[in-house]
Length: 355
Image (cartoon, rainbow, N blue to C red; front, side, top):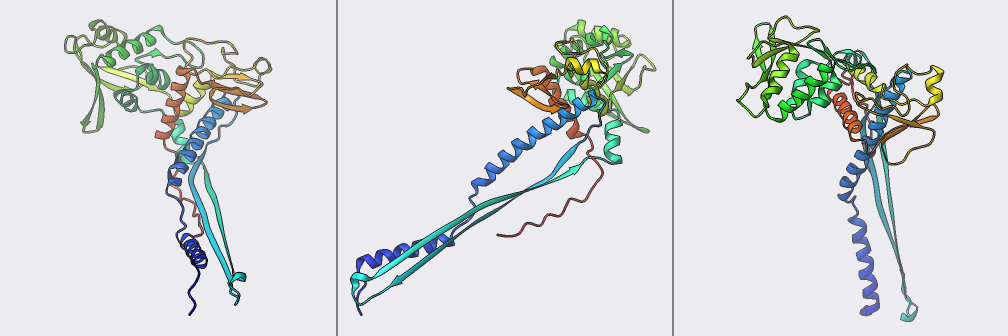
């Protein structure tokens, strides 16, 4: 038997290597990191834009629409093929060997959407935020300036700013004092079990027991009409307290919070004069001290924004350097994620073929 030449041996080794490569083809695990980051960023940006668009819609007395992303499935196709051929002649000089390889790569994202509607979602929009949730958010570290001014309408009759109308000066003074007390670690809450349910207790540490300035604690008691020396106060939902040992809070609904923030939309001059939008004192260029979110408008697509959407021929956006507006808007989105998003529904069945 004739021994194969060194040249033929090399060609056969190359052919075997290609066959081994074709058998080891698989989707790289690094795609998980890339997909998670890329899809997560896109979903986050679309969520911000959808929320901003609904705020603008409400300023124009338009119907808001919420569309949730139920699932994201990315299917990959990765394959390869190898071909080879050889011809052997008596004359070794005319022997030939042909090799070939081909690869295929594709990915097919499948995104399913689900409109948020129904009785459960509607109730979540129209139900006032529970007073316990207000204090839990503050207890979790969020500043009272953000939580109370966004969620609360009144405390013991002290009115917050509402729909562009200034509230009571005592309300802002109360929020400022509570913020200083919280930063000093002297504001807390406790849930107390009772026969008829549970009660929320707000705790104001006594003067000298903590680092809170005594004048702030004293001023909070004066503004709320609390009994002298009282350190544990029951929090209830209502317009006015029944005694000097209660704090009555009226909170906003989720729909009310969005509508309130819609008053921060700065309308273009022709839109404000045409009567197409809900009347309000905030027009382009105005920046009231009570304004929590400033949504600017213009005819051209803006640059360097936190979020921007087109609507009725204009662009509306929140500037990326407007930290106060960004913080309040982000808080709104967190509240939405905590709220009920609709009735229990069966997830769509998506069949992904194996490749």
